[in-house]
Figure 1 (spheres, helix red, strand yellow):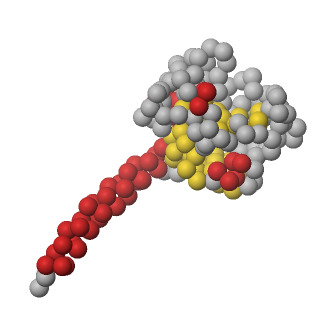
Figure 2: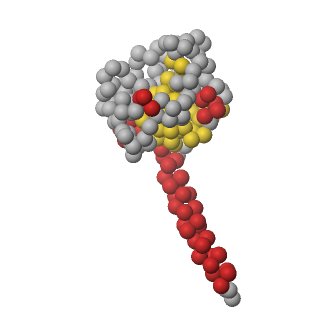
Figure 3: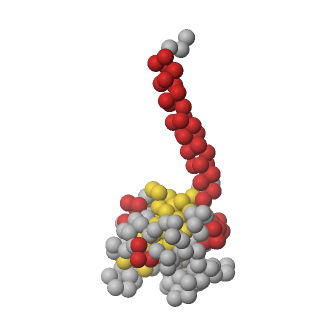
Length: 184
């Protein structure tokens, strides 16, 4: 038989149970937008943000499924700012064979630590395959670059990526992505 205390405790716990079930469902759905990037320092989990940048998120997913990023070097890395990769030529001058993307700038998110942005030329509509991960907040990029994802685990591995020249970011003997896959 339920007493008054049990009933109140059960009623109070019900929202938490519902929230836990909703969280599990949301996490399962997010696996289709979760990238696992293997570095020599560990695995980095990136959750793509199709709600902010649907075209860029899809391009990353497509290229990841093709194995495009496997072996790509972090050719431009500036301490305290970001690490850039995603060019198979490892020069920072090329992209994939897929079309360039239109800018998908947003005011709904900001370039904070672990933010993943699409690299581009001076043309805002030139993002293709290259992306960067912010080591620290870089809000001066807000509204100028597409935010495509967020590191949710493994930021310690990102922070260990070999840094380059403080001005150009050019890295001698750069670290590489060992393998990049979709989680779901």
